[in-house]
Amino acid sequence: MNLLITGGAGFIGSNFVHYQRQMHPADLIVNLDLLTYAGNKNNLTDLKHDPSHIFVQGNINNRKLVAYLIEQYHIDAIVNFAAESHVDRSILHPEIFVETNVKGTLALLHEGYRHDIKLLQISTDEVYGSLGSTGYFTEDSPLQPNSPYAASKASADMLVRSYFETYGTHVNITRSTNNYGPYQFPEKLIPLMIINGLKDKELPIYGDGKNIRDWLFVRDNCKGIDLVLRKGVAGEKYNIGANNEYENNTIVHLIVRELGLNEARIKHTEDRLGHDQRYAIDSTKIKSELGWQPECSFNAYIPKTISWYANHREWWEPLLKDRVKITQINQIPHFPNNVWYKNY
Image 1: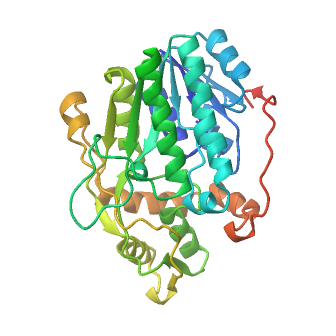
Image 2: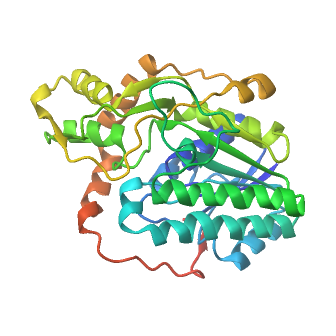
């Protein structure tokens, strides 16, 4: 299979690229990534000389580029990881999220339709909104996004559905819970807490810290995405979650203990706007229909994740030097649509 993987230099995307190279070494991967702040070529260093992995820097909104790659490399399917994904950033600049997450998905859908190939949209459980203390979201739960980020992903999901209903395009959507693992950009909770701990900084928790998330090791998500790509029924959606629900407080205290830190380093800060209380999804469908099961237990893989960041300072330290605090972002970056190159 020849795959066009968009956003393949990001956290989940790069882990998926590595999963594909391991599980399906005969496949060709064309990896299209704009390399914004969260896209990192160093996530793919070990594939630099792999002839079956072709890296292209470019914008998914550049339809001529997308069409060229589909035709040049005889692409069979598009897997769309490309997205702005940080809620805090979406609160300040929602227009960037619409540009990439909505318009970008539409561009890929249109080229998929024109070339009669399937598209797998990587979405999020955040499109469902917030849960109370009980219950689970299913694939049929209404979409009730509460942040501009979640709204942009829900909008993209609706476009994906429309291309199936209107044009008969082979599409699928996966919606996973919070991922953790190697190569995650330091702004997200787990890597931020680990790195702050390693750098003798405070560990900030939003609000009372009682917000609950279901944590999924990224490789288990990649396994589920791969199953949907190869076996998913056209037009169907699949939830992917591991039923590892923990309060943010619990996660941060766990990291403090693993790193041998003083709990006085933990500081509660003003809560985030529109902070959803709980995410939890029912993964019965992907388990029963496609045979997916999570393999990476939280108790085993959260220590491994902490160790990975502790042992890969050369990966994350350069990111901190270039990092702009979310409160200091005051302009929208401009990325040209026609700049791209292959490989490194």
